Length: 265
View (cartoon, rainbow, N blue to C red):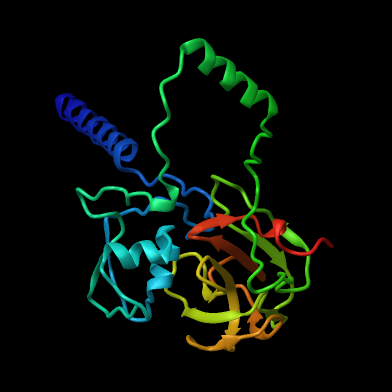
């Protein structure tokens, strides 16, 4: 009897130890707080992307942080940039490609050889008199005029360069009118981009696009020509945890701070 009790106790201890070890190795770790996704920068997660129903070249470029003209060139897609479901697009330049040569007007004759002392003296004089170029100079959107606020509300999220937020968040009420911040053409509307909910992308010219995310109801279609201030959607909380408008401006595929373009409040 005694030996049987010892064996039974030993067996229980071994089982408990194995259960504890298994829990430590394969247990479910607590989930990290959910953070808004989809606000991409310049680094696509994969080298290629298969086109899905509802995608446009503009939405894929937006998602991957590229200029739509880059994707068109790398994939030999001509205007009006028609793509089809199942088509596989490269998100990086083709291997072996080289930078484009400078235009003739940009090419300068090679400088004549100078004595080291004269060259250094000229360089010092130039650095003393030349004004430094402002790194924060914003691209001017003069072709289509000034920007206007897309919705009336308080800014609750700010643009973070090199961070996760590529635009601003503006608080409001469900059903509140969302307006186009500048004239242009709708090049995407749908919910295919992760983290944006119901989204509208407007192309203003060859360089500038803007996006309006988390809408409750979209009132425009792809191809619609939009005027500044036109109601394009109703505010909502699709794809996020609160009612707000996520608003972005991109210049040649690169996110810029919308507050640098919108009128001061």
